[in-house]
Length: 312
Image (cartoon, rainbow, N blue to C red; front, top):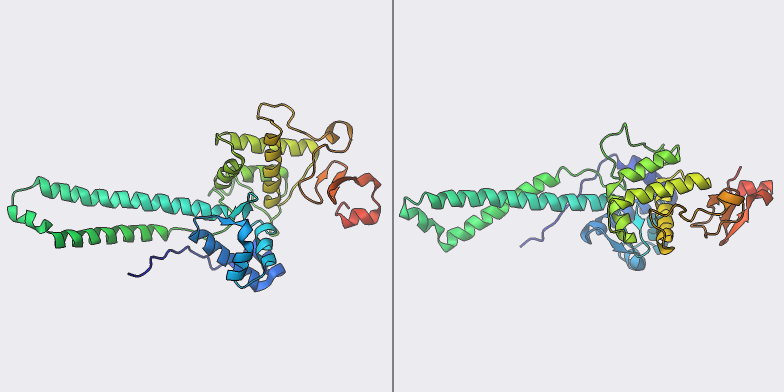
C-alpha cells in the first residue's frame, strides 16, 4: 500500500514577502530553502519542533545550526516559548484541516449510513439482502473510504499560502506593515496582536492562562504599560516577544488583571533606573537603555554612543 501523503499550497508570489526577502538578503537561497524545509517538518510533527534539537535539524537539512536559529529568532517567521517553536499559520491550518477532515468524514458516513438504513427499511426483496455478503461488504467499505478521501482532498485544496500571519479578511480594519515589516504606531500593533487568534491561543497556553477571555486583557495591559513607559516597537515579532516576556514576569510576580500597578518601571514616576531587567539589548524605557545586562542612562552618552545605539 502506498504511503499516505499530505500537502500544503505554496503561492508562486511568496518570494516577494518582505520577511522572506530579508532571509534572502542575510542567508541567501540556502536560508529560504531551509525555511520551507522547516515548514514541512512542522506539518509532519503536528505543528511543533523542539528548540533543543536544532543541531539535529541542521544535520538533517545539511545546513548550519546558526542558520536554523537565525530563521527561528531573527525574521518574525516563527514563535517560541523557550522550549519549542511553531508557525502560527501552520497551527491554524492544521487545526482547520483536522476540523474539515472530521466534518467531511462525518458527513460522508452519514450519507452512506442513511442509504443503508433506507435499503434495510425497504426490506421487500429477500434477494437484496444477499448483496451484504462478506466480499460485497468489504468492497462497499472501500468505496466509502474512497469517497471520504476525495471529499477531504478537495476541501484541502482551499488552503492558502503558509505564512507567519493569520490576518482576518477585513483589510480595512487590521493595519498592515510597510515593505520592511514595520508598523506606523503602537496602536496599530495592538490591533494586530488582538486580531491574531492562533497566536493568542498559543500565548495563553504557554503562560498557563486558563481563561481565553483573559488573553486580550493581558495584551491591552501590556500596551498600556508601553504607553506609560515610553516603550515603542515597530516590528510585530518584537511586540509579541516583549508582550510574552512582560506578561510572564507579571504572573511570576503574582500580579493579576485586577492589579492597578502592573510592575510599571519606577522611571515613569521619578526618573530612577527601572526596577525590572530589560528583555533584550537595546530596549528603551524613558532615558534608560538596556545594554550589556544592565540599564544605562542615555543622557550621559556621547554623540557617537547615541548614533551607535540608534538614538539619533
